[in-house]
Amino acid sequence: MDNPTAIDIDQQPGHAIRRLHQISVGIFLQEVGELGVTPVQYAALQVVGNQPGTDQRTLARTIALDASTTGGVVDRLEARGWLERRLSPEDRRARQLFLTPAGEQALADTVPAMLRTQDQILAPLTPRQRTEFMRLLQLLVTQNNDLSRAPSERAARNTPATG
Image (cartoon, rainbow, N blue to C red; front, side):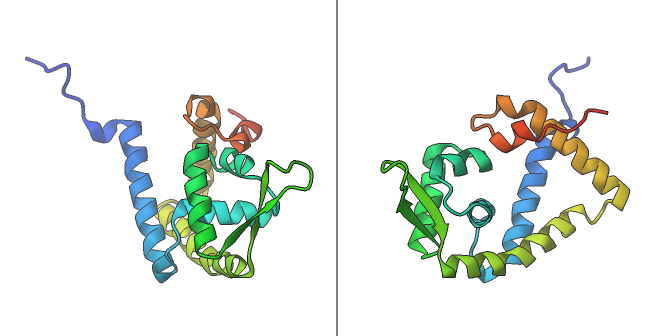
């Protein structure tokens, strides 16, 4: 008698994505080593480095985190002396985010580890497979972005072709 609930979890996309995320974080933490930067902290540092003066809400939407989680990330980066908040000249209620010199150095030190991580994650794929994998992955992210608890503004803007 067949069991209708006997599903091979290794054939489920959600499970495979979760496992790949675990692997990705593990490789990242191994590569970053004593710098002690998490993938989310790296993303925050990179966005603030790319867009100095961005506010915390925009940061949250850009890296697809909820506001309270982003607040905790910013608090930890500020406590490490890598990020500073400044009052916005246009809106005194808003705080703009800037990397400190130590934060700029931390970001510069982390980028090579992040790049090694990406290479290691994609190493089993040929260059053509890497391109196709990234195209399909971006398609899934952008087409499902609105279903996220914390949709990314970036994903909504960067919807790839479906062809």
